Image 1 (cartoon, rainbow, N blue to C red):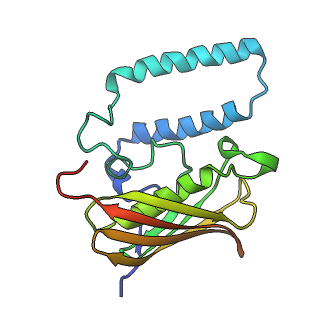
Image 2: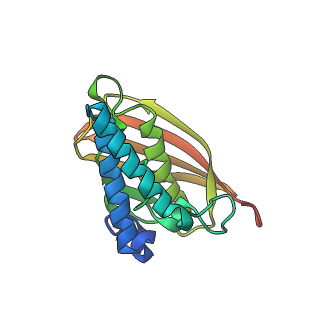
Length: 200
């Protein structure tokens, strides 16, 4: 039996990330929330846009180009500066199971005050990807099928769980679910495929 291992709040691989980069990712998450829900007048929006453009120019000399730089990925990098998804907290992970807590914010707003339907598969893909790759050769998502069962709310803690269903050669079949309390809001079935030797 595999013992669940308590992981750091953000990501197992983020221990090597510089604190400044973690802070930068956190600041960007807050910026995404503010931009997504702003009613700023034109002159304020223009001033903010200029500030963001200056920041972008400051970071440009240090940019990784994912298509070019070997080893760059969300798995090797960690999620601190990857801000499309919220951060998973209280993660427990072993070769069979993933458990974590996540909270969607204004950046992920969809219709009628709920989490945008497109944000949920991305969240599942991250959780399932961590599990599929934990202690194994790297793999990629082959398919991810999501069923929406109930509204997924914003600004509340949600419980995300995932498990390995079976492994057949290079194929890894997984299941994941997200709950708001006792309510199942969405679930997913996925296939991850182990890369062949030398594949990118």
